[in-house]
Length: 400
Ligand code: ADP
Image (cartoon, rainbow, N blue to C red; front, side, top):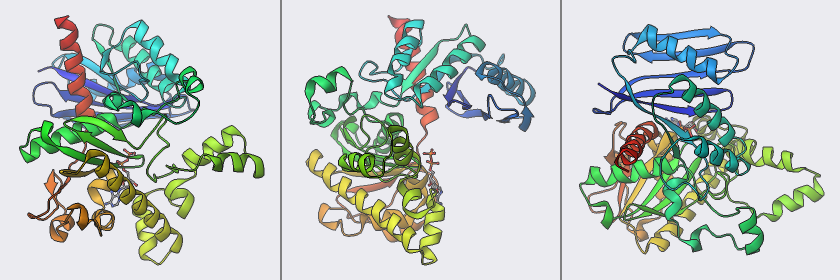
């Protein structure tokens, strides 16, 4: 049995999952966190149980050593499940990376070069890649980019209407994110319905802490709500989403906020948190049910923005066949799905209240049998998609 190790690395933590290359089953998963702090922590779930450990983890390299100890102790054995590949989530691939790419020193330099577009994410992703390559020097490492699925956006969709020369020099354009999830979910939806993806016009709503919508025609992303960074688009847990850019100018002039403060405001203190004081949708919903008006407004703003995007993307696609909800909120919050689709009967969207309220876990239809648009809930699985794409990249390279 061989496997793929999927790594999602942040600056002070990384998550991992071991996925069987054949059966696609998850064999183990874990988290190494508080890297660089006085006391770090690992948690690991394997076939022989779970473990939690507190120890000092000075850097990512030490983090991978701690992960290997956890595998040795709680399984599965990496000798009995040799790695076909290590797949790394990388947030920003710019316009250079349009497919999963086997990591070489040059690829590392290119990921680093894109750090000015994703200063929080790419350097952290790269730390994970470098440490993992040191831990597994004989295994191919593959970078799987969040932006790659959106490389099919037409120029009219990815262009901001600003000075073209300036935009070109500073790589200012829309790139889109959550691509791994949008690809996985749109393909899983077509498979679930037993319909060829080439025929389908789909909207995928990935609603987690970060949230984005994607219009998918024939399996290709043609429009998505996140832009040059993951800030644009829907109302998110702590991010504002769409905003008149002049708001920034106004706040800079009148409230004397500098660039770092504006960055912090829009990325970390806006969205549900900024509106209601709560960034987690479960808390917002609970508060709204208890009569909290700010929480109700946060929900209404979220829903208004979602309707706006569903309408816009249906127009761009020239009609709609399938609408899919996914991620933490999309998969679990039936009330939000219901409120979002209320009044969209004119688009051919008819929700079945009972199907929508059922607490099944897998992929399921939640529209009526007569609904012209099939509405689905499809659980996302970004780790599995990264594992699949990593194996494909390795196979492609071997064939070259
Ligand atoms: P991430 O983007 O961090 O991967 P998730 O996809 O796990 O996030 O989504 C997290 C969001 O999902 C949180 O806002 C959380 O409140 C929400 N969520 C999870 N379960 C439920 C639920 N049963 N009802 C409403 N929201 C939920």
